[in-house]
Length: 452
Ligand SMILES: Cc1cc2nc3c(=O)[nH]c(=O)nc-3n(C[C@H](O)[C@H](O)[C@H](O)COP(=O)(O)OP(=O)(O)OC[C@H]3O[C@@H](n4cnc5c(N)ncnc54)[C@H](O)[C@@H]3O)c2cc1C
Image 1 (cartoon, protein in one colour):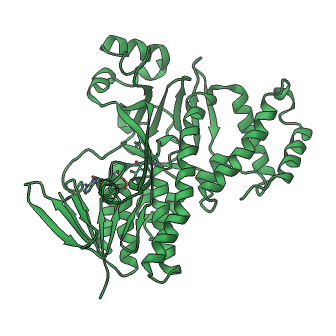
Image 2 (spheres, protein in one colour; image 1 turned 30 degrees about the vertical axis):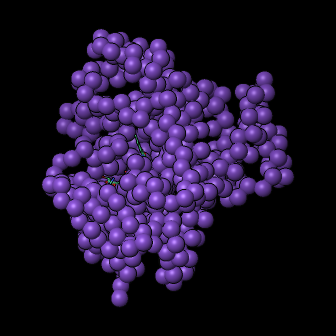
Image 3 (tube, protein in one colour; image 1 turned 180 degrees about the vertical axis):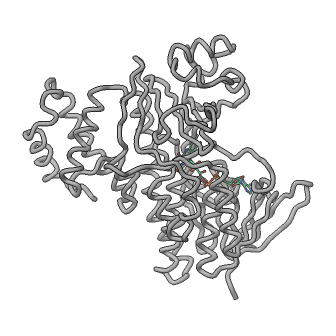
Protein backbone atom coordinates (compact mmCIF):
# COMPACT_ATOMS: atom_id res chain seq x y z
CA UNK A 1 0.00 0.00 0.00
CA UNK A 2 1.13 3.56 -0.74
CA UNK A 3 2.53 5.44 2.24
CA UNK A 4 0.33 8.32 3.38
CA UNK A 5 2.28 11.56 3.76
CA UNK A 6 0.66 14.43 5.62
CA UNK A 7 2.03 17.96 5.22
CA UNK A 8 1.12 20.68 7.72
CA UNK A 9 1.14 24.12 6.09
CA UNK A 10 0.49 24.97 2.43
CA UNK A 11 2.80 27.97 2.33
CA UNK A 12 5.58 28.25 -0.22
CA UNK A 13 7.53 25.23 0.99
CA UNK A 14 4.62 22.93 1.89
CA UNK A 15 3.00 23.29 -1.51
CA UNK A 16 6.24 22.70 -3.44
CA UNK A 17 7.04 19.72 -1.20
CA UNK A 18 3.65 18.23 -2.09
CA UNK A 19 4.56 18.41 -5.81
CA UNK A 20 7.90 16.65 -5.23
CA UNK A 21 6.36 13.88 -3.10
CA UNK A 22 3.48 13.21 -5.48
CA UNK A 23 5.99 12.72 -8.28
CA UNK A 24 7.57 9.93 -6.22
CA UNK A 25 4.25 8.12 -5.98
CA UNK A 26 3.04 8.88 -2.45
CA UNK A 27 -0.48 9.69 -1.26
CA UNK A 28 -0.07 13.32 -0.18
CA UNK A 29 -2.51 15.29 1.99
CA UNK A 30 -1.80 18.94 2.77
CA UNK A 31 -3.52 20.82 5.61
CA UNK A 32 -3.49 24.60 5.74
CA UNK A 33 -4.79 26.77 8.57
CA UNK A 34 -5.90 29.64 6.33
CA UNK A 35 -8.66 29.65 3.70
CA UNK A 36 -7.76 28.93 0.08
CA UNK A 37 -5.97 32.10 -1.09
CA UNK A 38 -7.03 31.39 -4.69
CA UNK A 39 -10.66 31.91 -3.68
CA UNK A 40 -10.51 34.39 -0.82
CA UNK A 41 -8.40 37.49 -0.50
CA UNK A 42 -6.19 36.98 2.51
CA UNK A 43 -3.06 38.60 3.77
CA UNK A 44 -0.31 36.83 1.82
CA UNK A 45 1.99 36.38 4.82
CA UNK A 46 5.33 37.71 5.79
CA UNK A 47 6.12 40.07 2.90
CA UNK A 48 4.32 41.15 -0.26
CA UNK A 49 7.11 40.22 -2.65
CA UNK A 50 10.27 38.17 -2.45
CA UNK A 51 13.54 37.66 -4.28
CA UNK A 52 13.69 34.30 -6.03
CA UNK A 53 17.19 33.23 -7.05
CA UNK A 54 19.06 30.25 -8.46
CA UNK A 55 18.63 27.80 -5.56
CA UNK A 56 14.88 28.30 -5.60
CA UNK A 57 14.82 28.18 -9.39
CA UNK A 58 16.76 24.91 -9.50
CA UNK A 59 14.16 23.30 -7.22
CA UNK A 60 11.26 24.69 -9.28
CA UNK A 61 12.92 23.45 -12.47
CA UNK A 62 13.31 19.97 -11.00
CA UNK A 63 9.51 19.62 -10.98
CA UNK A 64 9.00 21.52 -14.24
CA UNK A 65 7.36 24.46 -12.46
CA UNK A 66 9.66 27.30 -13.46
CA UNK A 67 8.07 27.78 -16.89
CA UNK A 68 4.77 28.56 -15.18
CA UNK A 69 6.35 30.96 -12.73
CA UNK A 70 8.53 32.98 -15.11
CA UNK A 71 5.67 35.30 -16.05
CA UNK A 72 5.40 36.39 -12.38
CA UNK A 73 9.07 37.40 -12.21
CA UNK A 74 10.77 40.76 -12.71
CA UNK A 75 14.54 40.41 -13.15
CA UNK A 76 16.70 42.60 -10.89
CA UNK A 77 20.27 42.87 -12.16
CA UNK A 78 21.76 44.69 -9.19
CA UNK A 79 21.35 47.13 -6.36
CA UNK A 80 20.42 50.73 -7.08
CA UNK A 81 21.96 52.46 -4.10
CA UNK A 82 20.31 55.78 -3.29
CA UNK A 83 23.05 57.66 -1.45
CA UNK A 84 22.38 60.40 1.11
CA UNK A 85 23.61 63.14 -1.25
CA UNK A 86 20.98 62.07 -3.81
CA UNK A 87 23.15 60.30 -6.36
CA UNK A 88 22.50 56.68 -7.28
CA UNK A 89 25.21 54.01 -7.56
CA UNK A 90 24.43 50.83 -9.43
CA UNK A 91 26.13 47.71 -8.14
CA UNK A 92 25.58 44.61 -10.32
CA UNK A 93 24.71 41.46 -8.36
CA UNK A 94 26.93 39.18 -10.37
CA UNK A 95 28.43 38.82 -13.82
CA UNK A 96 26.71 40.35 -16.81
CA UNK A 97 23.35 38.70 -17.40
CA UNK A 98 22.98 37.39 -13.84
CA UNK A 99 19.92 38.50 -11.92
CA UNK A 100 17.55 37.71 -9.10
CA UNK A 101 13.78 37.90 -9.49
CA UNK A 102 11.17 39.95 -7.72
CA UNK A 103 8.04 37.83 -7.38
CA UNK A 104 4.71 38.28 -5.62
CA UNK A 105 4.50 35.95 -2.62
CA UNK A 106 0.78 35.36 -2.98
CA UNK A 107 0.85 34.77 -6.76
CA UNK A 108 3.74 32.34 -6.36
CA UNK A 109 1.95 30.52 -3.53
CA UNK A 110 -1.26 30.32 -5.58
CA UNK A 111 0.62 28.82 -8.56
CA UNK A 112 2.28 26.25 -6.31
CA UNK A 113 -1.06 25.29 -4.74
CA UNK A 114 -2.52 24.68 -8.18
CA UNK A 115 0.54 22.66 -9.23
CA UNK A 116 0.24 20.56 -6.06
CA UNK A 117 -3.41 19.91 -6.80
CA UNK A 118 -2.74 19.13 -10.47
CA UNK A 119 -0.07 16.65 -9.45
CA UNK A 120 -2.68 14.79 -7.37
CA UNK A 121 -2.09 16.05 -3.81
CA UNK A 122 -5.24 16.64 -1.75
CA UNK A 123 -5.41 20.09 -0.17
CA UNK A 124 -7.53 20.96 2.88
CA UNK A 125 -8.00 24.58 3.93
CA UNK A 126 -9.15 25.91 7.30
CA UNK A 127 -7.41 23.04 9.12
CA UNK A 128 -5.18 24.16 11.99
CA UNK A 129 -2.80 21.54 13.34
CA UNK A 130 -3.17 21.43 17.09
CA UNK A 131 -1.76 18.20 18.41
CA UNK A 132 0.36 15.28 17.25
CA UNK A 133 0.39 11.80 18.73
CA UNK A 134 3.60 10.08 17.70
CA UNK A 135 2.81 6.73 19.32
CA UNK A 136 -0.32 6.31 17.25
CA UNK A 137 0.91 8.38 14.29
CA UNK A 138 -2.09 10.67 14.40
CA UNK A 139 -2.49 14.39 13.97
CA UNK A 140 -5.35 16.54 15.29
CA UNK A 141 -6.79 19.52 13.45
CA UNK A 142 -9.17 22.25 14.57
CA UNK A 143 -11.60 23.53 11.95
CA UNK A 144 -12.97 27.11 11.86
CA UNK A 145 -16.29 26.20 13.47
CA UNK A 146 -14.41 24.58 16.36
CA UNK A 147 -14.84 20.95 15.26
CA UNK A 148 -11.78 18.72 15.48
CA UNK A 149 -10.58 15.99 13.15
CA UNK A 150 -7.99 13.28 13.67
CA UNK A 151 -5.99 11.82 10.85
CA UNK A 152 -3.48 8.96 10.56
CA UNK A 153 -0.12 9.40 8.86
CA UNK A 154 2.82 7.26 7.88
CA UNK A 155 5.08 10.29 7.50
CA UNK A 156 4.38 13.80 8.73
CA UNK A 157 6.04 17.00 7.51
CA UNK A 158 5.88 20.22 9.53
CA UNK A 159 6.15 23.02 6.96
CA UNK A 160 4.08 25.45 8.99
CA UNK A 161 6.54 28.31 9.10
CA UNK A 162 8.64 30.19 11.63
CA UNK A 163 6.06 29.85 14.42
CA UNK A 164 5.45 26.18 13.68
CA UNK A 165 2.89 24.34 15.71
CA UNK A 166 4.36 20.98 14.63
CA UNK A 167 7.72 22.08 16.05
CA UNK A 168 6.09 23.11 19.32
CA UNK A 169 4.39 19.72 19.61
CA UNK A 170 7.69 17.98 18.99
CA UNK A 171 9.44 20.18 21.54
CA UNK A 172 6.81 19.56 24.22
CA UNK A 173 6.82 15.82 23.80
CA UNK A 174 10.52 15.05 23.31
CA UNK A 175 13.44 15.14 25.65
CA UNK A 176 16.62 17.03 24.65
CA UNK A 177 15.03 19.02 21.83
CA UNK A 178 17.35 22.00 21.26
CA UNK A 179 15.63 25.28 20.54
CA UNK A 180 16.96 28.77 20.04
CA UNK A 181 15.12 31.87 18.86
CA UNK A 182 16.67 35.25 18.42
CA UNK A 183 14.88 38.50 17.60
CA UNK A 184 16.95 41.38 16.28
CA UNK A 185 16.20 44.87 17.63
CA UNK A 186 14.92 45.91 14.21
CA UNK A 187 11.51 45.41 12.71
CA UNK A 188 10.10 46.02 9.24
CA UNK A 189 7.16 47.90 7.86
CA UNK A 190 5.88 47.68 4.29
CA UNK A 191 4.95 50.78 2.29
CA UNK A 192 3.97 51.31 -1.33
CA UNK A 193 5.09 53.33 -4.32
CA UNK A 194 2.06 53.07 -6.61
CA UNK A 195 2.47 52.78 -10.39
CA UNK A 196 2.66 55.87 -12.55
CA UNK A 197 0.30 56.63 -15.40
CA UNK A 198 -0.50 53.57 -17.51
CA UNK A 199 1.28 51.24 -15.06
CA UNK A 200 4.66 52.97 -15.48
CA UNK A 201 7.48 52.15 -13.06
CA UNK A 202 8.50 55.29 -11.20
CA UNK A 203 11.96 53.98 -10.31
CA UNK A 204 14.30 51.83 -12.38
CA UNK A 205 12.29 48.64 -12.88
CA UNK A 206 15.06 46.03 -13.05
CA UNK A 207 16.86 46.73 -9.79
CA UNK A 208 16.51 46.25 -6.08
CA UNK A 209 16.56 49.75 -4.63
CA UNK A 210 18.31 50.47 -1.35
CA UNK A 211 18.53 53.63 0.71
CA UNK A 212 21.29 52.70 3.21
CA UNK A 213 21.33 55.01 6.22
CA UNK A 214 23.77 53.29 8.60
CA UNK A 215 21.44 52.22 11.43
CA UNK A 216 18.41 51.69 9.21
CA UNK A 217 17.47 51.29 5.57
CA UNK A 218 14.64 51.36 3.10
CA UNK A 219 14.48 48.91 0.22
CA UNK A 220 12.08 48.65 -2.73
CA UNK A 221 11.28 45.71 -5.03
CA UNK A 222 9.23 46.04 -8.23
CA UNK A 223 5.82 44.41 -8.78
CA UNK A 224 4.36 43.45 -12.16
CA UNK A 225 1.63 46.14 -11.93
CA UNK A 226 4.26 48.92 -11.95
CA UNK A 227 4.21 49.48 -8.20
CA UNK A 228 7.11 48.95 -5.78
CA UNK A 229 6.81 47.41 -2.35
CA UNK A 230 9.10 49.29 0.00
CA UNK A 231 10.28 47.88 3.29
CA UNK A 232 11.63 50.06 6.06
CA UNK A 233 14.00 48.13 8.33
CA UNK A 234 14.15 50.24 11.45
CA UNK A 235 14.92 49.93 15.18
CA UNK A 236 11.90 49.22 17.37
CA UNK A 237 13.14 51.60 20.07
CA UNK A 238 15.46 54.56 20.43
CA UNK A 239 15.79 58.12 19.26
CA UNK A 240 14.97 57.30 15.65
CA UNK A 241 12.69 54.28 15.77
CA UNK A 242 9.19 52.97 15.26
CA UNK A 243 8.53 54.02 18.86
CA UNK A 244 9.63 57.60 18.24
CA UNK A 245 7.66 58.24 15.03
CA UNK A 246 4.35 58.80 16.76
CA UNK A 247 2.66 61.44 14.56
CA UNK A 248 2.15 61.88 10.81
CA UNK A 249 4.23 65.08 10.94
CA UNK A 250 7.16 63.21 12.48
CA UNK A 251 6.93 60.49 9.83
CA UNK A 252 6.84 63.05 7.03
CA UNK A 253 9.79 64.96 8.46
CA UNK A 254 11.77 61.74 8.91
CA UNK A 255 11.19 60.62 5.32
CA UNK A 256 11.87 64.12 4.03
CA UNK A 257 15.22 64.15 5.78
CA UNK A 258 16.42 60.62 5.00
CA UNK A 259 14.57 59.53 1.86
CA UNK A 260 13.59 62.80 0.13
CA UNK A 261 13.43 61.24 -3.35
CA UNK A 262 10.66 58.79 -2.37
CA UNK A 263 8.35 61.13 -0.47
CA UNK A 264 6.67 62.44 -3.61
CA UNK A 265 6.29 58.86 -4.87
CA UNK A 266 4.35 57.72 -1.80
CA UNK A 267 1.07 59.62 -1.68
CA UNK A 268 -0.30 57.41 1.13
CA UNK A 269 2.89 57.38 3.19
CA UNK A 270 1.51 58.42 6.56
CA UNK A 271 -1.75 56.43 6.28
CA UNK A 272 0.22 53.29 5.40
CA UNK A 273 2.80 53.96 8.06
CA UNK A 274 0.19 53.92 10.80
CA UNK A 275 -1.98 51.21 9.26
CA UNK A 276 0.74 48.61 8.53
CA UNK A 277 2.29 46.71 11.42
CA UNK A 278 5.93 46.95 12.47
CA UNK A 279 6.71 43.25 12.23
CA UNK A 280 9.57 41.48 14.00
CA UNK A 281 12.47 39.52 12.52
CA UNK A 282 13.46 36.22 14.03
CA UNK A 283 16.12 33.56 13.58
CA UNK A 284 15.03 30.09 14.73
CA UNK A 285 17.42 27.19 15.18
CA UNK A 286 16.39 23.80 16.46
CA UNK A 287 17.53 20.19 16.56
CA UNK A 288 16.64 17.45 15.80
CA UNK A 289 14.42 18.15 12.82
CA UNK A 290 13.39 14.53 12.35
CA UNK A 291 12.00 11.58 14.28
CA UNK A 292 12.83 8.07 13.10
CA UNK A 293 11.08 7.38 9.82
CA UNK A 294 7.94 9.35 10.62
CA UNK A 295 8.44 13.09 11.11
CA UNK A 296 10.39 15.95 9.62
CA UNK A 297 10.48 19.74 10.00
CA UNK A 298 11.23 21.60 6.77
CA UNK A 299 11.46 25.21 5.54
CA UNK A 300 11.03 27.99 8.09
CA UNK A 301 9.64 25.54 10.64
CA UNK A 302 13.14 24.02 10.83
CA UNK A 303 15.23 27.15 10.19
CA UNK A 304 13.70 30.62 10.04
CA UNK A 305 16.24 33.31 9.12
CA UNK A 306 16.26 37.10 8.75
CA UNK A 307 15.49 38.23 5.18
CA UNK A 308 18.67 40.18 4.35
CA UNK A 309 20.14 37.64 1.96
CA UNK A 310 16.78 36.95 0.29
CA UNK A 311 17.29 33.24 0.95
CA UNK A 312 14.59 31.97 3.37
CA UNK A 313 12.26 30.66 0.68
CA UNK A 314 15.15 29.71 -1.62
CA UNK A 315 16.62 27.64 1.20
CA UNK A 316 13.23 26.00 1.86
CA UNK A 317 12.87 25.14 -1.84
CA UNK A 318 16.39 23.72 -1.77
CA UNK A 319 15.33 21.56 1.22
CA UNK A 320 12.63 20.04 -1.01
CA UNK A 321 15.06 19.36 -3.87
CA UNK A 322 17.65 17.74 -1.61
CA UNK A 323 15.00 15.63 0.13
CA UNK A 324 13.81 14.43 -3.27
CA UNK A 325 17.36 13.43 -4.24
CA UNK A 326 17.65 11.50 -0.99
CA UNK A 327 14.39 9.63 -1.68
CA UNK A 328 16.00 8.32 -4.86
CA UNK A 329 19.39 7.69 -3.28
CA UNK A 330 17.93 5.73 -0.33
CA UNK A 331 15.23 4.02 -2.39
CA UNK A 332 12.32 5.16 -0.24
CA UNK A 333 13.90 4.01 3.04
CA UNK A 334 12.54 6.85 5.15
CA UNK A 335 14.69 6.28 8.19
CA UNK A 336 17.78 6.77 6.06
CA UNK A 337 16.24 9.61 4.03
CA UNK A 338 15.33 11.69 7.07
CA UNK A 339 18.59 10.98 8.87
CA UNK A 340 20.65 12.06 5.85
CA UNK A 341 18.40 15.07 5.24
CA UNK A 342 19.02 16.42 8.70
CA UNK A 343 22.76 15.67 8.61
CA UNK A 344 23.14 17.46 5.28
CA UNK A 345 20.85 20.42 5.80
CA UNK A 346 21.39 21.45 9.41
CA UNK A 347 24.94 22.86 8.86
CA UNK A 348 23.72 24.64 5.73
CA UNK A 349 20.72 26.16 7.49
CA UNK A 350 22.96 27.38 10.33
CA UNK A 351 25.36 28.87 7.77
CA UNK A 352 22.73 30.81 5.84
CA UNK A 353 21.31 32.09 9.15
CA UNK A 354 24.71 33.60 9.92
CA UNK A 355 25.25 34.92 6.38
CA UNK A 356 21.81 36.56 6.47
CA UNK A 357 22.54 38.39 9.71
CA UNK A 358 25.90 39.58 8.33
CA UNK A 359 24.25 40.86 5.17
CA UNK A 360 22.07 43.24 7.16
CA UNK A 361 25.15 45.24 8.12
CA UNK A 362 26.37 45.16 4.53
CA UNK A 363 23.07 46.43 3.14
CA UNK A 364 22.21 49.14 5.63
CA UNK A 365 25.71 50.48 6.23
CA UNK A 366 28.58 49.23 4.08
CA UNK A 367 27.05 49.77 0.63
CA UNK A 368 27.16 53.52 1.29
CA UNK A 369 30.95 53.36 1.79
CA UNK A 370 33.04 54.17 -1.35
CA UNK A 371 35.85 51.86 -0.18
CA UNK A 372 33.41 48.99 0.14
CA UNK A 373 32.14 49.63 -3.38
CA UNK A 374 35.74 49.51 -4.63
CA UNK A 375 36.21 46.22 -2.80
CA UNK A 376 33.15 44.86 -4.61
CA UNK A 377 34.60 46.06 -7.94
CA UNK A 378 37.87 44.34 -7.18
CA UNK A 379 36.05 41.12 -6.30
CA UNK A 380 33.98 41.33 -9.49
CA UNK A 381 37.18 41.77 -11.52
CA UNK A 382 38.81 38.77 -9.83
CA UNK A 383 35.70 36.71 -10.50
CA UNK A 384 35.73 37.71 -14.16
CA UNK A 385 39.42 36.83 -14.61
CA UNK A 386 39.62 33.77 -12.35
CA UNK A 387 36.08 32.36 -12.20
CA UNK A 388 37.17 29.10 -10.60
CA UNK A 389 39.41 30.72 -7.98
CA UNK A 390 37.40 33.68 -6.73
CA UNK A 391 33.62 33.82 -6.45
CA UNK A 392 32.23 36.67 -4.31
CA UNK A 393 30.22 35.30 -1.41
CA UNK A 394 27.01 36.93 -2.70
CA UNK A 395 27.42 35.00 -5.96
CA UNK A 396 28.21 31.76 -4.14
CA UNK A 397 24.96 32.04 -2.22
CA UNK A 398 22.78 33.47 -4.95
CA UNK A 399 24.06 32.20 -8.29
CA UNK A 400 25.93 28.99 -7.41
CA UNK A 401 23.32 26.54 -6.16
CA UNK A 402 25.85 23.70 -6.12
CA UNK A 403 28.03 25.41 -3.53
CA UNK A 404 26.62 24.53 -0.12
CA UNK A 405 25.72 27.40 2.20
CA UNK A 406 28.22 26.02 4.74
CA UNK A 407 30.96 26.12 2.09
CA UNK A 408 29.99 29.66 1.12
CA UNK A 409 30.28 30.71 4.76
CA UNK A 410 33.71 29.08 5.05
CA UNK A 411 34.95 30.62 1.78
CA UNK A 412 33.44 33.99 2.64
CA UNK A 413 35.31 34.18 5.95
CA UNK A 414 38.64 33.57 4.23
CA UNK A 415 37.87 36.04 1.44
CA UNK A 416 36.69 38.70 3.86
CA UNK A 417 39.91 38.43 5.90
CA UNK A 418 41.96 38.90 2.72
CA UNK A 419 39.86 41.87 1.61
CA UNK A 420 39.92 43.48 5.04
CA UNK A 421 43.69 43.44 5.04
CA UNK A 422 43.73 45.21 1.66
CA UNK A 423 40.93 47.69 2.24
CA UNK A 424 42.38 48.93 5.51
CA UNK A 425 45.75 49.78 3.99
CA UNK A 426 46.01 53.54 3.46
CA UNK A 427 46.67 53.45 -0.31
CA UNK A 428 43.89 50.98 -1.19
CA UNK A 429 42.19 53.47 -3.54
CA UNK A 430 45.44 53.74 -5.51
CA UNK A 431 46.41 50.07 -5.68
CA UNK A 432 43.06 48.23 -5.79
CA UNK A 433 43.23 47.56 -9.55
CA UNK A 434 46.97 46.98 -9.82
CA UNK A 435 48.50 43.68 -10.96
CA UNK A 436 50.52 43.39 -7.71
CA UNK A 437 47.30 43.50 -5.64
CA UNK A 438 45.83 40.72 -7.72
CA UNK A 439 48.96 38.60 -7.31
CA UNK A 440 48.93 39.14 -3.56
CA UNK A 441 45.37 37.85 -3.37
CA UNK A 442 46.11 34.84 -5.56
CA UNK A 443 49.11 34.00 -3.40
CA UNK A 444 46.92 34.09 -0.29
CA UNK A 445 44.28 31.74 -1.68
CA UNK A 446 46.93 29.34 -2.93
CA UNK A 447 47.60 28.52 0.72
CA UNK A 448 44.01 28.39 1.93
CA UNK A 449 41.59 26.12 0.13
CA UNK A 450 38.29 27.56 -1.03
CA UNK A 451 35.50 25.13 -1.98
CA UNK A 452 33.88 26.09 -5.24
C1 LIG B 1 10.09 40.64 5.32
C2 LIG B 1 10.50 39.33 4.74
C3 LIG B 1 11.06 39.29 3.48
C4 LIG B 1 11.48 38.09 2.93
N1 LIG B 1 12.09 38.08 1.72
C5 LIG B 1 12.54 36.93 1.20
C6 LIG B 1 13.20 36.91 -0.07
O1 LIG B 1 13.37 37.94 -0.72
N2 LIG B 1 13.63 35.72 -0.57
C7 LIG B 1 13.48 34.54 0.12
O2 LIG B 1 13.92 33.51 -0.38
N3 LIG B 1 12.87 34.53 1.33
C8 LIG B 1 12.40 35.68 1.88
N4 LIG B 1 11.76 35.67 3.09
C9 LIG B 1 11.63 34.40 3.80
C10 LIG B 1 10.40 33.63 3.34
O3 LIG B 1 9.25 34.41 3.52
C11 LIG B 1 10.26 32.34 4.12
O4 LIG B 1 11.49 31.67 4.19
C12 LIG B 1 9.23 31.42 3.47
O5 LIG B 1 7.97 32.03 3.48
C13 LIG B 1 9.18 30.08 4.20
O6 LIG B 1 8.18 29.29 3.65
P1 LIG B 1 7.45 28.20 4.54
O7 LIG B 1 6.48 27.55 3.65
O8 LIG B 1 8.45 27.39 5.26
O9 LIG B 1 6.69 29.05 5.66
P2 LIG B 1 5.47 30.06 5.45
O10 LIG B 1 5.58 30.76 4.18
O11 LIG B 1 5.39 30.85 6.71
O12 LIG B 1 4.19 29.09 5.36
C14 LIG B 1 3.72 28.37 6.45
C15 LIG B 1 2.27 27.97 6.20
O13 LIG B 1 1.83 27.17 7.26
C16 LIG B 1 0.53 27.59 7.67
N5 LIG B 1 0.36 27.23 9.08
C17 LIG B 1 0.93 27.82 10.16
N6 LIG B 1 0.54 27.20 11.28
C18 LIG B 1 -0.29 26.20 10.90
C19 LIG B 1 -1.02 25.21 11.63
N7 LIG B 1 -0.95 25.15 12.96
N8 LIG B 1 -1.77 24.33 10.94
C20 LIG B 1 -1.84 24.38 9.58
N9 LIG B 1 -1.18 25.31 8.85
C21 LIG B 1 -0.40 26.20 9.51
C22 LIG B 1 0.56 29.09 7.42
O14 LIG B 1 -0.75 29.64 7.32
C23 LIG B 1 1.34 29.18 6.12
O15 LIG B 1 0.53 29.06 4.99
C24 LIG B 1 11.32 36.89 3.66
C25 LIG B 1 10.74 36.90 4.93
C26 LIG B 1 10.35 38.12 5.47
C27 LIG B 1 9.76 38.14 6.83
